Every structure is written in C-alpha cells, then in structure tokens.
Length: 289
Image (cartoon, rainbow, N blue to C red; front, side, top):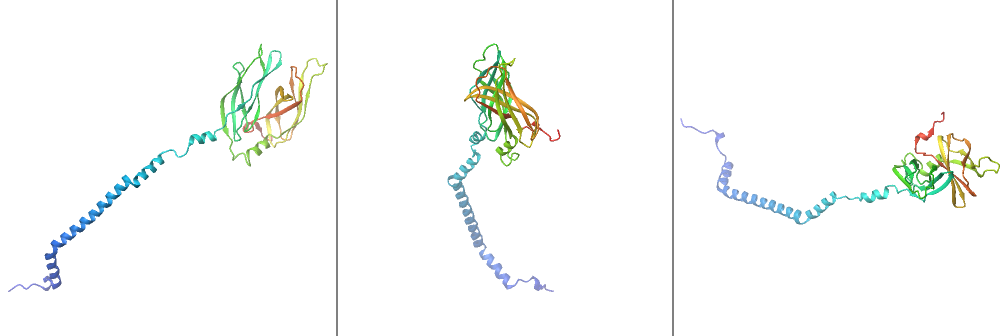
C-alpha cells in the first residue's frame, strides 16, 4: 500500500513562496545586512574619532584646565591667616623710677590692639629682672611693672621683653550681646575720691600715699582684684604701684590706699585701673562663699 503524507506534513503555498524567495534572495539579503553593519560601524567609528579629537584638541583642553584648577588652592589661606590672626602687642618705652634705697620701679605701658583676642604671656625687663606672668584683655592698655627691683646701681636701659605668648580667641557665643558690653558688666568697679597724700613733716617715716574708694558695681564676687595706681605730674608718670583687694563681693565698697617710700614730686592726677582676668572662671567666687 502506497504512503500518503498527512495534511500536517504538507507545505502551504505561502510557505513555499517564502522559501522560494529566501533561496533566490539570500545572497542579496546577506549583502544588504553586511552593508548596513558596515555603515553602522563606520558611523560609530566616525563618532568615536570625533569625540577623541574633540577631547584632545577642543573641549578636552578646557576640561583639563578646569581639572587642574580644581587641584590648585583656590583660597589664599596665607592671606586669610594673616588677616585674621591677632596683631602683635604694642609696648612703649620703659620707665625706671627710684622707689627707695637701691630699689627701682620699672614699668612700660603695653597694649593689646585686638578686640576679639586676649593673651597670656611672661615678661621681663632686661636680663637681670626676674620674669613675671601677666595677661591683657581685648583692647586693654596698662602698665606692666617690676616694682621694688633691688640693684646697687641704676638699672639703666631695660627693654621690655615679652615671651611665651599664648593667644585666646574670645568665644562670641559666651560674650553676648557683644564683647564690650560683656566686659563692662564684669569690670564695672566704681573708683571715687582719688587723692594723693604726701607725708607730714612730723611723720617719723615719710610715706607718700594715694587713697581711693572702690565699689564693686558688677554682679559678681571676686576672690582677688588688682588695681594699678598711677601718679601723674602733668603728663609725666612719677609713680606706679599695685594693690590687691581680696574677696571683693558684688555691691561691696572698700577704702584702699597705695604707698610709696621714696620722694614723689608734685602729683596732679591719680589714675586707678582694675587688673583682673575676667575670662578666667577661677577669679569668680560663688555667692555663698
């Protein structure tokens, strides 16, 4: 019996046409596909060459310049530090006055010109006078002194030397509303009745005195508050001394005097200036102490 193929195994007319078309055109299709791939490859190569050329000769040059600038220091930190660092202390000429037999008072006015820095340091006059520690508040100007220096002869020229300087920037968050107001609230010592009292002819030991009253008009109690007392004859300084008041409480009033045991010429003015480091928490005493 002869084999008769089933219907499922027979090709349709449409399939036969597709097969015939592919057999007769597959060479052309392959060529067209090759041409398309070649065109795409050429376009990609052209784009790549253009991008490389642009990077090497065009926009890439600008990009490399910008990258180089990023690596450079854009801010002049040297100038910034110079502009913001504290300025040096300023000192006037040293003054030497006799304060008794073979004793001398040596002092020089020194100024801290910085409104937002206070400073701690050591100072000495010449090489023979022992070093002392001191400080200056922001904008403060006062005498640094070595009082009662013993010497068989006049010390002569004794230049002020300031060493071991330690600057402290004021914390503006802790000195509100501003530094000046904050400082005035803590340095408001009311000095009144300043007088210069020369010795009487009948005194067995001649003593020259400057007397004054101090009232603590601040809201703070202090363990110790120093006062520099300066005697002036016109514009000339003829005497400098320092006194310390212990346990000066808020609202308290004290009578104070400073003494000299050497001849003081005519005095026309007595200046009194407080000396207390209000930035040091250890100078304040608690209200109950």
